[in-house]
Image (cartoon, rainbow, N blue to C red):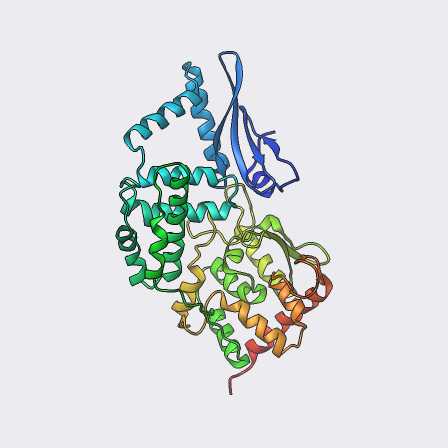
Length: 401
């Protein structure tokens, strides 16, 4: 049976790699480190062969099928897809033998099997957005420390100090690969870091005073946005998950019909599974939204699809832009600030034990002898989430007098 995007996305790692077959020789290998590799099995000159066609989710199911079809068209013309790929690579190497981009992409491919999907996506973005446009065409032997510093200056001027340091880290790793493969003998990136401004840790802006929280909730309720955005704004304080987890929530992970409704999903950042018990107020919001976005498909699985509904979730800036439009300054409240708001009030106002709060925030709880467990204290957390929703309702109707 052909695969679906949901099947590939939800495939869990096992102790040993295993295969999930699609059609036409296409299959995906799920590795113990959560990496998912597309491969194509085919026959050429009477011999069975296989070819890598990318990694999931960088290459989605439809893209993998297109690459499969392209390879099968080559086979129909008597061309071995593997030989053609080698010929293209050789031609590219002849023209760009040791440019920074060539070495960087070689390094990137060598690390893909060990990187988590999010790490691979972020590093490729840093290479293609910040590095290649500036030094990609230079020979790696000619790249100098001043070249790297000039490349990072725009980020420094925009005060994107964390990004600047991370971009430099990628460069350092590329130079280490170049040393290991005999292209250069010295890593010049190490000498650039002292010249960068150090990133100062900052806390996300958050409202924690009960009267101000009530005012904030009333402002959110009065905002005239689309039903999808309004639902996200109302659920953000109720769920207090990370903004990226909220906007990429999938209907397939939400159970509204059981005796104890819940949302269970996998957190990419921490590589843990997490459960959010659903308060009655949360269930009501989701049931009202379900007729609009709940007809889930492989192309549109999200609770909060993007405005164009093109198979992508809501933009990462949607909630922040909504709050700025309402008149909530970024110095006062951020989309991430709902987590700090809940942490503070659940502790200081509702007097729930800190370990329950930390578990619901999907943090590892120090001093308890065990790693984070999604089901730990689930009954107490369910009670806490309902009382938190009731508390927000009380603040919403209170006056500020």
